[in-house]
Image (cartoon, rainbow, N blue to C red):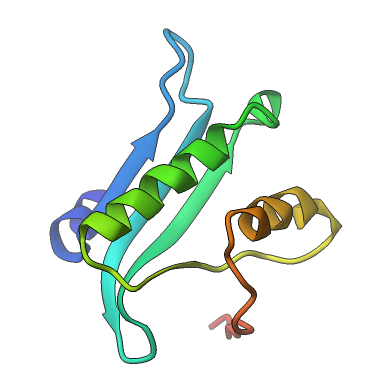
Length: 110
């Protein structure tokens, strides 16, 4: 599945290297063209190991993707994020990076 996404959707993976240990933080993203926002980099996933939170890894990965979007000539970077008390730290990070809450995301499980 991941290889198919990489081949057909310009799906990219970036991560923080930490020596011999697993990557403490990973981000996946892809370039899209949407009617509502034009050229867009969409962040599919951003995750940090619990033991590595608060060290700036997620912020660095967001900065990297924002820079990539600029280099690609994109007008926006967007992502969806769940909501609830356990998401407060993530939302604080997004707002500090100047993301704004621009819509509600609706889904229907089939």
